[in-house]
Length: 154
Image (cartoon, rainbow, N blue to C red; front, side, top):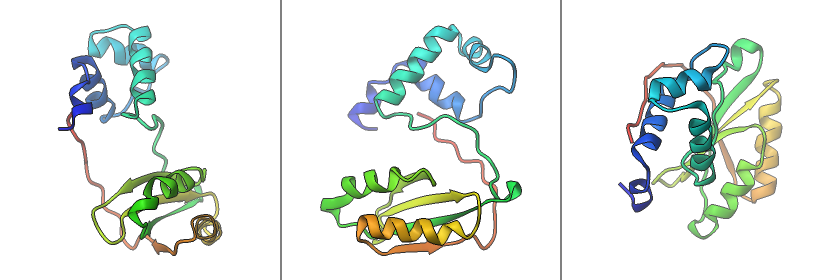
């Protein structure tokens, strides 16, 4: 646990843990979620904004199956010199096609998912990221899909 993680309140931890199970599908999802967590909607929304501003949350949104909607996605990786990691992360994250980006302790130390409306756009986005970063972008398209329930309690 990092020092920053110790700054989370019990409510913040409960919010993050609960969000990993999804958001209620109803007319007032945040009100229902707040009631589950024993708080009110205003407090929940304020905590979500604070958690996002502090960098604990990057995005709250639906997970779509891009392929079922006619689109495509791929997993890509970069070998980023450590001195350029933050710079390159900002460049990659600025692409609207990048769904998420994370660091790994590996020669390929930056991994990200690209989601596009048309499969032909994947090569175009990879090429643009290569041009913007000056780094070779490695494409790892899906060969088989597995569904895992991954959750990290905080």
